[in-house]
Picture (cartoon, rainbow, N blue to C red):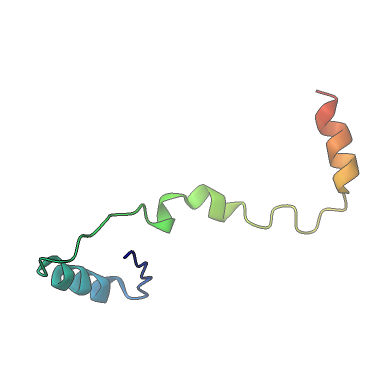
Length: 64
C-alpha cells in the first residue's frame, strides 16, 4: 500500500517522520519537496492578463 501525506507544520512533520521510522513495517520514500522548484511558482499567472489568443501565440511560435 502507498500513502501520500501532506503536512502543514514542518516541525510536526519531522516528529511524525521520526515516529514512522521507528516502526519496522513502514518504509519511507523521500520525495522532492514542492519548494525545490521555486521558479515555477514565481511565474505562475504570468499570462493571466494577456490579451493574446492561443491562435496568435501559435502563429508567432511557428514562425521561428
